Amino acid sequence: MRSYLLYICLSVHALAYNQTYSLSDLLKMADTANIGLKNARLEIAANGYQRKAFLAEQYPQVSATGDYRYNAIIPGQIVPADFFGGPPGTFAEVKFGVPINLSNTVQLTQFLFNPQLNYGLNALAINAQIVQIQERIAFQEVHYQVSNAYFALQAINQQMSFLQKNEKNMVELIRNMELMVAQGLVIPTEVDKLKINRNNLSNGILKLENTRLQLQQLLAILVGLPSDKSLEIANDEITSNPTIVESTNAVRPELELIQLQKQMNLEERKGTYMAYLPTLSFYGAYNYNYNMEPENNFRTGIPSAFLGLRLAWTLFDGFEKQNKLKVNAYNKEKIQNEEIFAAQQLNLATANAKRDAELQTANLAMNQEQLTLSERVYEAAKAQFKEGTISTNELLQADSGLQQAQANLVAAYLQLRQAELTYLKSISQLK
Image (cartoon, rainbow, N blue to C red; front, side, top):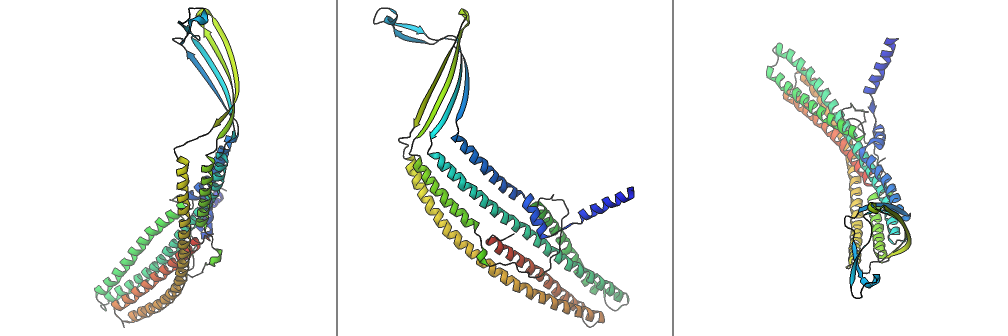
């Protein structure tokens, strides 16, 4: 029984360790675990509470204060002496209060009219749309980064596969050549030429291993996995598989942001005009003063209460609002210019990316054909070399041509994928 359970545990561990991820898997993981997307969604949630915090100004504000005072010297006041029956024209000093005073106040304040409230609510509503669009932009950026890293890993894996196959062929040739050296048919220098080529292949594999590890760590961070976790991806065929869609499906969140900036600019202008109006608030307070004079054993409390209206109106602000309106007008013109420029840039970027993707599709097909031809040339050269009809240099030349064709194919594949990603990102169609 224990052996059976151990077998199950080891099997589960092996499955988890050898799990491979498709691009769809990685994108789904990034949607829930990527730090950038998490922060963008937290910003949306925070905006909702900012609105609630601002709405609190609509409700009554209640405050309470307490004060303890010990009058080391009781304050006095000069009053006419005849008030107490003294001679006219003279004054007497009268002390008011007792040594110890306790004061407690509860106050209620309620805005009846606040012209800035509507401006603030409208600005927060616009900001809510802004953070939602920013989350969409972050979504596209994260999907671009994950997809780009995924396809870069695909290219690395394919290039490693080519190099490992080439290395295996070279090892076989070296083994055969060493037998020929032992028979005195060729000189050892010819073997050394092949060994140099093999060493170059081995070095290239080591470099690719390091690059692959770096990309795996980056991809793990992007999708929310620990950077030290082994992350294997599913193989992707090196074919064009075009993912281009018509630009009629283009979405321009950048232009939507500029539209919201225009709305915000308009609301700021309205808010500045509303600042010319006064604010009106109702307030009421209840106060209880407790006075004590321990020497005479005197203690008494005096309650008080009042209600009132407060009107606050800035009649002159040093032309602050007038200057704000001028700044607002300049910002409006600047936003309009940015909108025109952004639209031109985005349209140009989309057109260029689409042309690049079409070019890279043709380039990939050409490099696939080039690789097929290079493989034929190499196989023929290898057969001729074994027959002794061509030299080692000619074989190495064919091998070099094959390696170049392999590298060109991998580069064309990666360039095509990157061009497709750039195009889809430019129209916000990365899913």
